[in-house]
Image 1 (cartoon, rainbow, N blue to C red):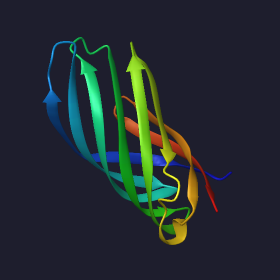
Image 2 (cartoon, one colour):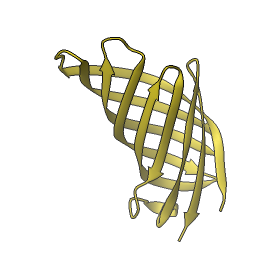
Image 3 (cartoon, rainbow, N blue to C red):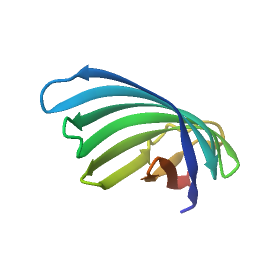
Length: 130
């Protein structure tokens, strides 16, 4: 299975809290990113975050539409995000939504991980084209 690696920058982060009840704040966040490396292009992402008032843990889920190239193949696809963390330990994974690929990325499937190292973001994505 091919692996794509690289980095991304967050170009915009627009949180909109919608539930600030005791215990945790729930927000919808709209994000735009630029990818460099084997995956080169841009994306728009919408996530739902849950952050306790103490801020020692957090979680989010969401969807991201990537537009660009993957190892030189042009198209789009959708990523499903799942992430959580507690006391400095993080898990950030994504899977490609089956049947969401377009163009030369038609039939793409797979998944990978995101690494957030004090604000520097890198990724790997294992994928198949079918």
